[in-house]
Amino acid sequence: MDRFTQAYIEAMLWAETDGDAPLVENYTADDIVPEAMARIIDDCKAFQEENATRLAAYPTGGIYSREELAGHDLWLTRNEHGVGFWDREYLPQWARDALTESANRLGPVWVYVGDDGRLYL
Image (tube, rainbow, N blue to C red; front, side, top):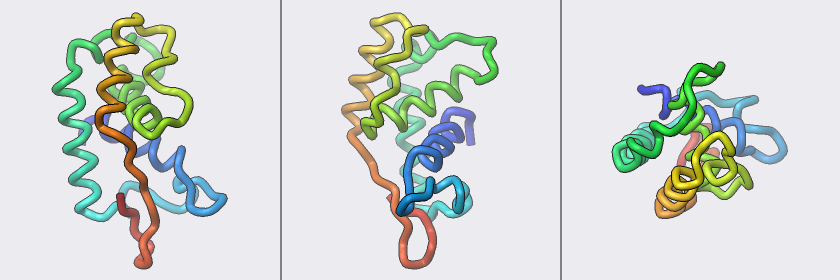
């Protein structure tokens, strides 16, 4: 799994909750059912392919790679968490706008804990 997809999953586990607790407190990527993992991988791959030029505008050399930053931002943007591509001042405006629009076209996706204690979309 690439860094973009790993960061997308990390953002999902960090930003979403099961009741009052962030998912990251009780779940890992290993708890995601195969069908949901396949969708995650497909969504991340398609987004990266569609936006390769725009994603290249992310800075390099920080503590996080551009792939990690962008994967995290995809989860936050598509699920309207109030931060994401649109407010990353280190990106040129054209990239912020285009990445936000592309994430919005994907639409939100919700994660939930099933009766079996696994994570579903």
